[in-house]
Length: 625
Image (tube, one colour):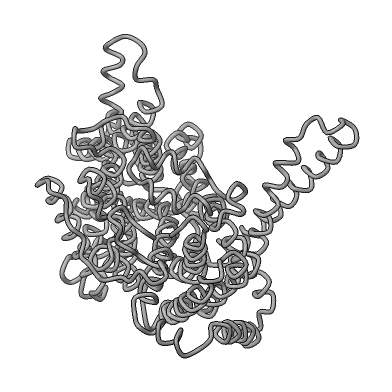
């Protein structure tokens, strides 16, 4: 992908590539922020490299009401700091300009999303705190409460409520008009909408509540807690230290985010394989020694052999459909069908024009891939948002409250549960919609005299998306196998040969085949957990993007450069934060390590070959030199 400074970054077919470290912006403030993020990332990798027992001895243990160790203190602190830094980096990517904060197009939407994420993350914890506070008369009207109980109870209550309410105020302020109404109103709305530090409160509040629950004396923990009758008639004591488990269950609502980080991991994996494949002398030696047609035949034979060995015959037609659609979209043949044109316009305002323009031609394909992740994510976030507002409904059932402790907990997921099942649903819904529109098109043609032509146009737009959704089903069901990645990449060669001009077919076949081999080796290393853990995969991606091949991060404009660095730093810190938190938690509370393992496999087995095929097809357009 060519970048602003004309530094090639993969699949340029002979333009070459050399490793080069990212050049930092000139401003002192920007350099300090980048240095702080780098230091925090290094601490996160250090925490991931230490055994859980050793981390516990170094940082102390946070324990629940039963005395079980939940998370080493060091892992909790570093993981929460990484998540807070990721949120701040995302805010900087949305709002940074050299002239200070400005209401850029799209900034409000980004701040709204971040505000909803923060409020949903702390919503489950806030619900538990409100229930406990109501049981104690909100620590103001209980006759048996001493001053210490009232003070600490109100402190925890205020922390939880403020951390939930203030991000929602930022969301509402960004939804309201800024340029109409009385002067005081406009000033208040603008100040509230630009209160970026408020978005960090949910993560800080969770850490503060966990620290308070661990540091309070046992007697005070019991006074602030709740005792409920058991089925045998005895009273069961639930101290307030159980709130640290509630904080972890609230963080579990963010456990789908590593799957979205995996999209970035897949794109960077493809970019690295492409750059290495075309940079060496191996391609030139093969080109002079072997006819490219022989390489093409060998690649086709290898695909068939892998499908036969893996007992996945449906993988070949699925890979051909998916890769051919990507090639046609990248070459411009199906751009109107699968592209998201609005991304190019939005990216121009933010300075991410190249990034958005790269993704836009296959934007709907990536959306179909991300939909199974986004759907359960938003469902869980909605449960977090509406949790604190359920206090009136919870008031009648407090005796049985602790028996429903796991009611709002995010369930564990698997690769089949997230992707294969959801993809089948998407394919089914898309197919049903196409059939419905087909009937509408026939009705329009026969009975209305073809006066409503838009029905037919919409139908033909949905047909390729349905094919893509159906093709994903057999691919994602075997995405944990390493041979899927080279199969998808090589399956795009037939369509590339139809699109490419005669002089470029040779380079296309050789470079894509070599990149597919490299991607297959990388996929095997990722698939075999004994070779690479999720933390090692993320560390390799971070080192590649920031220290070896920055690509379009090295923009000549410091404002755009810092915004792009912040964007990618937010992804890196988010992935590190979730991995560190999962590293120190019990498996029943946070599954981020398991989800990261799933995301790595899907990213390298599916996203990476799709991006590789698309980049090759984009460089084969007639108007590309």
